[in-house]
Image (cartoon, rainbow, N blue to C red):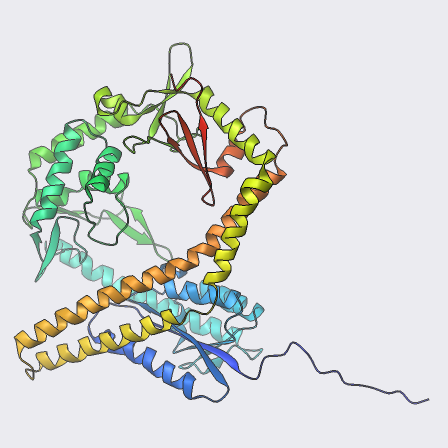
Length: 516
């Protein structure tokens, strides 16, 4: 009897229509790169739309971002996230050096994309990762791109050092209080300089860096870069920055390894102290008094960083961090740092450590007992929001197109003016309008990008819920490891403590003694 053979075609093959995306990047802020950036976005949009059987997903584009680290490129990471969600079948890139200048990260990304069934085509090298023999070629090309990046970085750093030796080096990102005047000169921004002087005087008058940051947030002081709130670290950086005296210490840090990471210069390389290189905002005497005060406070810091409550408790009245203190009997309390400095600065009284532990036990046991009432609805709402933001979002594509068009117009007008073909006043007005438009578009893109944070928040909340489900049915004594895995922050309330868990859930517990 003959055998009958029936061929069953694969059911999970690639669809007839390929969902195609493109990734573009320019690695400098130089004006001549603007046209390249705009041209890449425009050409890839036209190419994908005109290709039969291709469907445009999005054009992912990063401006003036380093290719040596993946975490610095917002759109690259967004593209990878969309691949993981199954939105992309194929990615077009001009060259491997545009994709990554770090061989390790390049291959890791390509291997992940291969597991996801996403192919990558590199135009310059004529490499398609859809073939089976290209990983070696990618590795070689990636190594060349990595060496190119190292060589460029070394040349740039050598140029920086020569300028430092001549006393000419000025950062291209001036600190708060200054702006670039042009020609390597800094000039004072009057309204920002007033804030700097107020910060130095406030610190000498007894305010802590965290308290100063909280007051700045309360007053609505605007930041130079971005719209996030002021934090303690920014104030500490100001208080230690010698640039406010009109002097500059160059090469405080240097870069090592690849990808590059900055480390503090502790004598490994020369440093260059340039005096009177720009206008001073504060006097040298005021700066020295602040440094002396900071050393005094550092010498009497009362808290060990290894304690599970360390840096977790924030004052609900003034926003400063709580510190741990032991009395003569070894009994521990936690106290607001501003209250330590001056009781009239913050009226929040110390809290017994045992009371904080007890409040955590109550909070955990409540969540464990009522997990179905508290955690499940919150997780369900977060997952519904996650699904909503993962749907097709054409707004990002439109924003990228608008940025490309405005960037190209900016470049063309600047070119015409430099060639003397357009009136300076008319050009200045048009360029200012374009810059305002670009600022708005980039802000809109940042807001759209924040949607990707929903997936991360949902995953964090799932992990928190799972930790509580798998924890003990009833917690009888404080567990430092469990506390560290669940609690992101504790904020003092008038009669209790508000626990914020990882994932965003907040639970308030009363203190039966109200503190010490």
